[in-house]
Length: 402
Image 1 (tube, rainbow, N blue to C red):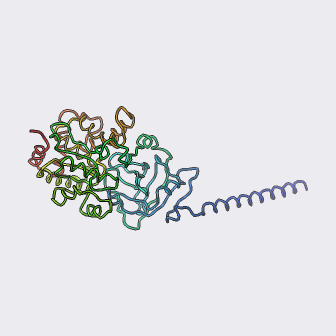
Image 2 (image 1 turned 45 degrees about the horizontal axis):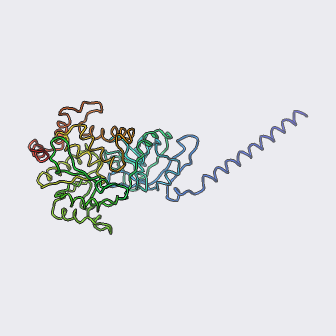
């Protein structure tokens, strides 16, 4: 009898535990089924759990046309609330099967050319997936309207150190800068045998998305700019800017209507055929124009940085001179110099500037860039872009002092 009682007690205990377990599962299901902001945006989100694979977001995608990148149709705040933090490593899988592994999530394009990133750049409202300064991802992945993407967390904080070092944001308020030139990232090119006061670079004088166009446009007039090499825009973009209420770039318009502006509409893909051929065409136009010349993209940083490095190298500028000019952008926008922020300065030099030098020369970071290496590389880049020897010589004469 005692044995029967014990067995009965054990059976009762097991039954109670089973009921308790079922109750727990029901509670968990109710919590997961609660609508979230991301679900209201027609995305699917799985809750963060004990392993990274349990955090994932699925959302429709559209082409982010400025760079041929991919924009997720989910607000950044909802993406972040789903369990993603800057510095995380993610897997990106599109609905057509194209997949990218180990993709860092940054608030800047802080990767070498061709490497993928998920970007929450200041001013973006949705995550953008792109090859950093490389091939247009939308086309390369074969995406089309109606496709979607699933982003899955693979490793928490894998790229946190890089994110923290390069977590830099600039202000669009003029009052926070010492001069109009600093605010517009506006300056003359120098180095090697470049003509003095002939070539200038900086932010866009026509795209006012950073609230700099009017001030930059005034600087063009003040410095007597006679020709503009516009790396970023095309006819359609110019028309859209002119329709906006805040458009106030009268000097740009005067040059544009006088056929003194070349519109190249380039993405930051320095070694693609489209970039190289279009740039060669713009340089052919430039040498027929009276200066001073102004070269710009949007911020005057990466596309402008590459083109100016190319021209400086062709004019015989040294590695140090080209570096000094490139890093002036980070002083103007962020107050970063070798003395003020040595760790950030070195990270930018290694990640951004050396990427430009690598793209120009096709040489590794540890190569010797002394002597005529940069000049020879600039000439070869122009040959690869389709320019003939006499055209390269004409460009050199246009750039250099007699």
